[in-house]
Image: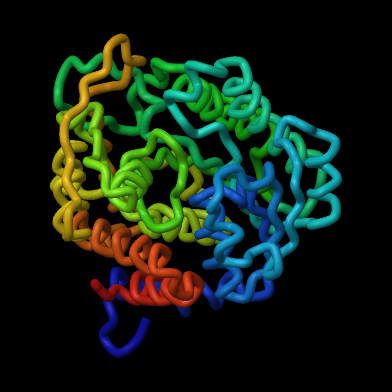
Length: 373
């Protein structure tokens, strides 16, 4: 610090684009799930920062797909493989010899987990075991982050209290519960194999619902809004009164990068963190749809569509991020209005066949340098 700079100002400087770039530039980084929505955004950021980026993931599933739209396969080392395939994952790790690992590979859809529960548990639990086994067996990893979900907590819809990190882990549906198990697997490996000097620093991040350009998954609110609006259909909202901690995808990605960076230098920072927005940005699905319609304009509109015998989904979910704020001085860059505005900006550019790499890079630079749209 210098020139009267406070500790918080110094931390913010280290967490802007240039500060994080100085850390990751030239570093070997592995991202599992790199062909997915969050994984592709993360790889784009790391590539812009000059990291040597490796990825391990299933092939892109949706068409269109952000991984291909950003031409990431030509900017990084991409291995297509199943996280459940230990031998192939180990081979990828041996080739990459990463210093830093972000584990995002997962079956991430709640409603899909009701259709394929066994595959969901295999992917989300044994996938975590496999990546931790690779880190245990292959030297060189300095810092590892397992990305889970805000849905890991036991949620009986019995009140409106935000979850804290010490609450019971017991997700309801197969997806949520498999992520609870992934947390417990990680905690066990830390206690059993990663204690002491020279061991990889390991954390988990329990992230809230993310929105942003490039998510084309089925049964997610914003992609559904985009598809229906482009087709000039009225948007159908299943649970308009369900409360969720919505945030732009860049919010958690910045924290992931920060946790991995700082826990290597200060091992006591390793742990488990809620990663969500401020309380005022925890809104209902209907309110999110209102913001989408407002920003998209034109004939965009939504209506409530009640489903008969719909799979269980929690009505209320908020995260208490006090720990994240106190440890890293975290505060959101884009509140929900800015998040939806950026999201609509991206999808409109894509729909109008504009250069998606340019708009993505522009949003990354604006975000990391604390500039609203």
